[in-house]
Amino acid sequence: MNYDVKNLKLSKLGKDRIEWAERDMPVLRLIKERFSKEKPLKNITVAACLHVTSETANLMLTMKAGGAKIYLCASNPLSTQDDVAASLVNDFGISTFAIKGEDNKTYYRHIQSVLASNPQITMDDGADLVSTLHSGKYNLSKIIGGTEETTTGVIRLKAMAKDGVLKYPIIAVNDALTKHLFDNRYGTGQSTLDGIIRATNVLLAGRNVVVAGYGWCGRGVAMRAKGMGANVIVTEIDHLKAIEALMDGFLVMPMSDAAAVGDIFVTLTGDINVVNRQHFLKMKSGAIVCNSGHFNVEINIPALKKESNKVRKVKEFVDEYTLKNGRKIYILAEGRLINLASAEGHPASVMDMSFANQSLSAEWLVSRKSEVGSRKLKNDVYPVSKDIDEKIAELKLASLGVKIDKLTPEQKKYLSSWQEGT
Ligand code: ADE
Image 1 (cartoon, rainbow, N blue to C red):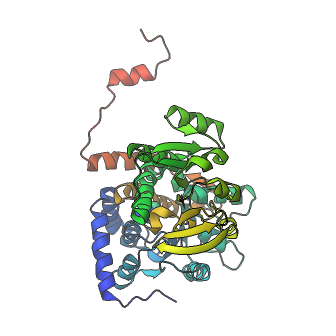
Image 2: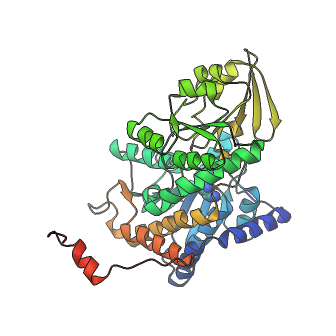
Image 3: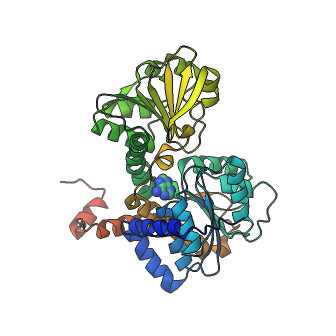
């Protein structure tokens, strides 16, 4: 079933929104212009499982400009912007299978619909598309390769490669510097707070904000919460990251201690039950708990339900759990990605670089079609080519009108010499 939205008013809103995002995606625009002329993806079928946002729409239009046939579904049941999905279908003729709030069954049915296209390239965010494609029900004879957008997806795919079950090469877009240094840090940092604020309108100044996980996403959230006047506490399982958080000026403690003092909790670890039954029992009444990690497994909501007498929705994206001890705990967006559920995800300006990596990595894979399966391009997870990463940084700076210095011949010579520096 295609998501055949006849609501033209919705499409109009979506089209305007896609155009608005495009203004802040200059690197992707340059790639789209080149793709339109060179058609590097001519007749290539692409199955994409991404958050269906205005920024993703611009990526899809770039791929289409390159000649690709696109099938798009959502990479999370709550992250779809319905107006954007409607516009992609009605205005741009892109097969889109996504509805905000779709249940799990529909979510997977949409993934299956996209896979029915018999894709040559997969573009995933979280690896649900790739793992479904590896279920044994699909013919992989046409596949060239895939790209993966997020940390969680890369971890899953590397586990598949290690177990020898990955059936085609995948580029870890997440690991490009022009992706995670900006998207994960500044994108998640800003959009997570945006999501919390839109859902609750809570004042951050003076509040104790507990950030679980000090990877690039956690770093961004901690930094931005501090900037808004919160007292930030970081919880970690990694010694190095914990020292880094400490020296970045944050309190570091285990979740079992943080639980009692936190006002707002944000999980960004990629792991399960980071906020668990024993933590809920220690929390202050009124504590707000949300997740900005890829899957809705970081907060143990079933355990919270068991400890509660009553659950009610107090406003959109805010559920109030009244515990048997009388305290109230607020869970945002059912523990799903708060930045995409109640806000609009990362700003276009960072998605510009992430999606430049996506489109150029897809082009790179297609250009190496003949090497797929050979020793040159095995069924493994590969980094984005350094040339692509550097080019994107160069283009982004140029689009922002920022110039930098160049090494003089004398400096180049000095850097390549091992002799004494005096
Ligand atoms: N992931 C986080 N923010 C996003 C956005 N705006 N579009 C697509 N994927 C995202």
